[in-house]
Image 1 (spheres, helix red, strand yellow):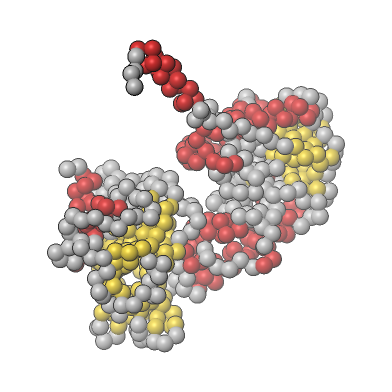
Image 2 (tube, helix red, strand yellow):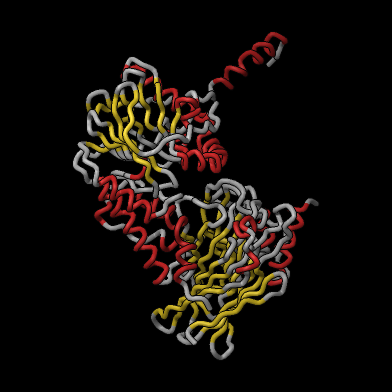
Length: 257
Length: 312
């Protein structure tokens, strides 16, 4: 087993702890994108649950990967009823999952930025409460090196000076909903660059004023350096959020206080 | 079916023929458009760099002089530069005697590989930027353009130009040392025909690209260009400008992109949402508008967020 497959395996371990008893070999529905990794990722993610390619899941991406270190993706699954979980999957990345989001008190909507290590499918894999999976996405052409080049702040050498700087803002949308944007200064080291061990934000949690969970997210090293997240939470009141990185550091913020 | 030795031999002879059928057959065919006495524009495709167009997307200018042709921007690859050189020879009866490179971007600069470095000139900043980014551009162009790039190496220009009046082969020019589209942007006026050749400081009916842009510097340079008397303008991309509208159009687009992205951050949009903003009807004639807006989002958005989102 090489290093890459160990890494990949560890993702499925963490994914499977969220969906116990899932993984088992079976024939998956054919992939319209023809990805060479579809069967492999499908076996890890879907288990026996039904899978469909669903136009109700919208993946908004630009026409061109202008910067393979910072490629924006917005997933909007609001047309689907009762969404349980949103996984952002980049088939051919060495770190194939970027985020795994459970919008407990939020709309099934998430925007962030990812690294691309080569031309690859970029997909939203969305699970509804009935257990079924709804998939959408497309191929993105990209030059190599998004995951295996050092972050800009490592090259500049100033990452530690800004580590954990948090910015954020809330916008009240209609009907008791709040659009929340959060950015964190963080190198998001993948572990794939020589002499730089993996170091990334791992968890992000969102709470309302009463301490009720609005959403939780697993975050992996394929999320871009200085990560940014946009979510739609179902509250009109203050929102507190907290990110935790792989060294146990916590970066918290509160909006609308 | 019986396969004898002769049949095997024959099959062996035919197999390479099948392989040859796959051979790359792309050929640059630059076309010249006369502008005035002894000066031509060569139009690039108003598209993104891609295999289908061989990367030939930038405009070039060819100017006849007694000492050989002047070629302003030699294209994207060695083959492209050679094709432009052959065109210049046909038009002027003389080989290329001087090459100017307007700025670092590969669609304008990498065709230098077709010429003797001693005759290739650029601003000092352009040479320095090509020293920094040339190999990266080369990798990117080989990935996108494959065989179109064959034989192309990074050839650095002499970084020996400064603004001011000059001449070559008895033909007077005025060089302008500007910046804003990149760290060094060369423009020139052919005094004999009052033609202003702008490189990528001016785009015309094709959306401006901003990968190394400093918008305040770019606006200042557009101000300089607008103040120079000229009859026609050869933009870096897009058709010849005869009515003086291209400078204002370039400025209008840059202002709109900057204001729109600023507003998008203030309104709470993420990058891919900002890239999907509606493009005003007045830019309907601009080719590649959505593509360049999304590239500009990538170039400017994270910095705008760091500036505009409140620190918590």
